[in-house]
Structures are given as structure tokens and as C-alpha cells.
Length: 129
Picture 1 (tube, rainbow, N blue to C red):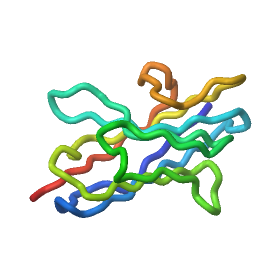
Picture 2 (picture 1 turned 135 degrees about the vertical axis):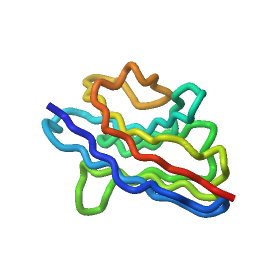
Picture 3 (picture 1 turned 60 degrees about the vertical axis):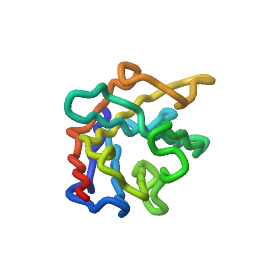
Picture 4 (picture 1 turned 90 degrees about the vertical axis):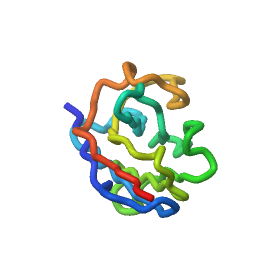
């Protein structure tokens, strides 16, 4: 069984930055894609970023492209960090970490939430002016 666990989030100021972390535990011997999704009240869930832990290839959703970075922890190879800079009120949402184990030539790019079987509890991020 695979279990993602988020940390970080909270209240942030507009224009500031945030760092979210996702620690993945359990059976992690396969190829792993770790993704962040977010959902604001009244809106659909949207992809934020993803990282293939095998190739370390990052992928970014349009809402955060150019102002975010997703990376593997230097000391824990199944922990992923997501930084988002230049925060706006539109970044207010519940952020969830999701994981899928895969084989073959699959990749993390532009994957839909239903393709991820393992989810964390989520962490709230609230950006204020």
C-alpha cells in the first residue's frame, strides 16, 4: 500500500511564496509519479505539477507555469517539494498530493486525477491580499 502525506500550506500573503511537501511511504519500488492537484470552492480539481521520480522530469499546469518548481528531496528520494511563487488570491485552494505507480513508457504529463489511485488528505492554502 502506498500512502502520500502532505505538509506545508496555511495562510500566505499575496505576492509571497509557499512550499508544500509530499512524503510517500509504502511500496515504492516501482516507477513513481507524484502529482499535486488543487481544488478551490466551486471549481473543478486542476493539476498543478507532477514529478516523475524515475527520470526527475517535472511537469507544470498552466496556472503555475513559470512561477513554480517541483523537486525531489535531497535526502529522501520519495519526498517531493513544490514551491509556488508570486502567489495570488487565485492560488487559494486545497492542495492534494497524489501518487501512481507505473510501468513501461507511461509518464506524468497532464494526467487526470482519476489516474492516481493514492491520495493524501490534502492541505489548505489560503492567500490573502
